[in-house]
Amino acid sequence: MSIDLKNAKIALRQMKDARSLLFSISESLDDAIQVVSKAITIDCRSTGLSLLPDDVLTSIFEMYIEMSVTAGGFVYPTVSPHVLASVCRRFRQIVLTCPGLWKHVSLEFSKMRLLSLKDRCPAPIIHVGAAYELSRMNLDNFPFIHPCQQWREFRLIYVNDEIGHLYFESLKSLIQTPLEALERLSISNELDVFENEEQMGPFSIYLDGDDLRTLSSWQMPNLTRLELRNIIPMAPLQCGNVTAFDLHVQDYQVEVLSMAAFRKLLLSMPKVQSLSIALDVSASFDTSPDTRLSLPSLRSLELQIHGNTTPSLTTSQIMGLLNTEDLTRLVFRLIGDYGSEGLLLEGFVFAVVAPTFGPHHEGRPTSFVRVEDFSLEVQHFRCRHGSLDRLFDAMPKVQNVSLKLARADAFIPYIFHHIKRGGMLGHLRSLRVALPRGCLDDFIDQAWNFEGFFGDGRCMDLEVLELEFIQTCNTESLRTRLCNFFGEKLCWIEN
Image (tube, rainbow, N blue to C red; front, side, top):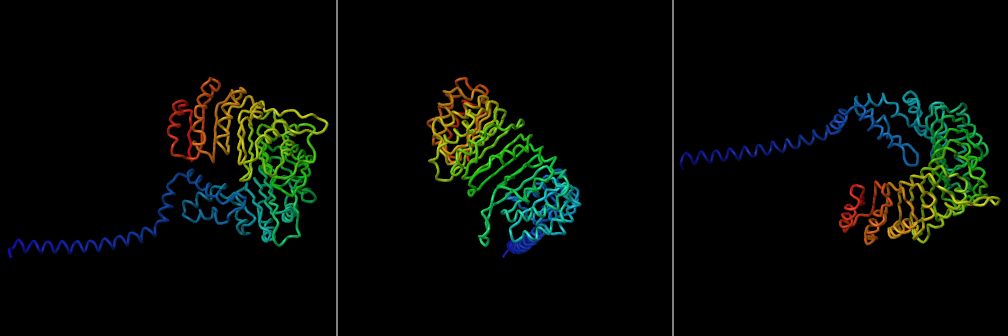
């Protein structure tokens, strides 16, 4: 064998040995890299976040803290600024210098935690509410929260009258001075009956007796927002500077609603600007209003009606009580149960525009002459041709219209025939149509109506036409056609 061949074999063997050694080293390095990467992942993440500016980190922390509050108003104790402060020194420095991150104070927190929060946030949001079996323990925590003069917001939730009474009894001795700092008050009665408490109830939405005396004694000179759920005080409250009031009543047991109590409640807020009412009841008011209520600052009205249970008379009585001529924003939500598509929209519209007055006064149509922004949401109701004629005829200056309807085939013929024939929507600037259960297939043959309606010079001020549908596969031709006609005015949304 030649010397060159021997050298080549030796070189090849050395190369193979080197490859095996490198492969073994590579596997070992991969394992080591995985172990080290797993060990420092958390540190790397926190280090990366800590490089962000203070204001950006603060915003992120604030969003995290807001996640601690559930939709029902309860606070998760494990989602807290203490968790953020334990990550690294950088986080701790920011958390300890930002009082807003410590603002949520719950009666369910431990006594030690409640005491520590007193020095962290001077204007807290106080959360009070618990299940029946926890209520006694929570009552013992009242002395450890901030003094009532510091409360910026107070959110009280109780499951029924019996538990609510326990809270009001404790609050009676706790709140003895004006609530100078209080800006927002929320009280919710869930009207729940426990399985082992069959003897209790029926519970009431009306607050009276000692609990009413406690609530009505609170002086709230700087309160601007009031929210009540299944709570109607039988006497006025001391909240004359409230500008936003939300009332939600869901009670199928109440036999009759008190018009006198409702009127007194609204009169205790003479400066109210925004009023939101949601009703899911089976009763109407005991009397119809003889005169409209004077709320000179009222500019926004939201009315949500559960149509399957709430009588049209109840809607009519509310609209008969309110003076709507100065409204600039109007929102109607008509909610039905699944399978109730047989219900018609006309009954609701008639109740809104032709309210019921007392026996000594003739009813007169409701006027929305200053309304510029109008929104209508309809679920599980049929909107027949011409259903909304009366409604749009009552708001001649409306500029921005948002419609969220259940069916497409009811919307298109109506909007392009009846409104045009009646000379309505002459000042229209934006039209937003959402059909959560509809797709363009439902009315693709009606597309020419868009061009015919908006192309006759009637809506020269139109700036936005927004269409929202369920995504389908054959919408490109219609989208192209409308884009060619409306250009940048068209906003196309497919879900």
